[in-house]
Length: 382
Image 1 (cartoon, one colour):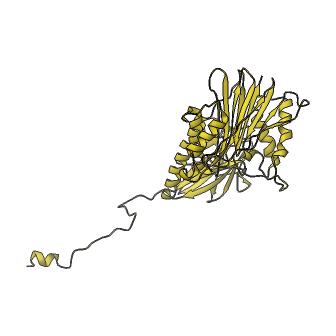
Image 2 (cartoon, rainbow, N blue to C red; image 1 turned 180 degrees about the vertical axis):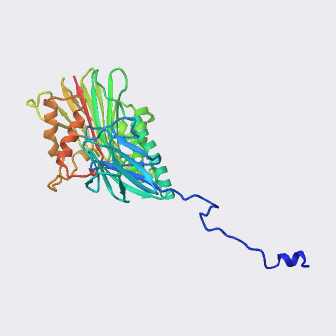
């Protein structure tokens, strides 16, 4: 009869499971993803975590798309054996996969294009671990975008200054920031800044500077003095302490009682003041030559002032408005857009004027996303 030691000798088996092994684990379903493609904006992700889903113009469709080219219930997406199946639901304008109009359910390959009305999507099929990091980054970008939107000012329709703006970043979040507010009962401040570079780092730096101006937390600085404000920003945000980021800025203060606008520009191009009647004088550049903010410390910043006639309009914009490549390949400059400013000042205008200016420039630019952030502010002085 064998001893206990004899029984154990040479009969112990060790099992080292491979990485990712789970006992009796069900197969992991792939993640289906749609990217909404827009020539004028970064792609937008639509992870299809809950299938089947309907794409349409109104609820109860799960994915809603605006516009008359999309039917109320346009098409249906479902998963079958790990594949994505797309079916048109009798839509008016049809559903297209790789340019072919659907006449029945179709299995969509990875990388295929799906066209729904005026919307173009790219389909991707990914493993779950491939999409986890992308989903986390998407949530963070969404939170950052919401934060940027939360500190941008609303339009002003009444009072001594009327204000409207249009903003389109060249990436998900851009390096432009702007703001305006009453400093007290008499003085109204306004600014636009443009941080070097693009992406999250530039956006966060822009928001930090904007918050300082919004909260007026520069020590010993009179915010009615544009030169002093720029000097204070230059001292607070040196590039060597801010990841080598610097910025240009145009900052102005309007005296509502005296109708005088005092302004300073730190490396920024001019803003333009236009009369209600352009026959009196054309666009007046408001420019003061000062260094870019953050590059050199201990330097003075100078201001200037101008009287503001009743009915005048001030256009303040980033260089992404005019530094564009035209459809013919020509490089545009600031002189190319000045006639558009003059037309908006003398013609019908209102709170939508900044967006109309974007549409005019977008029509001149080559197809695709603009190379830089596009920010336009329009102020009217009744």
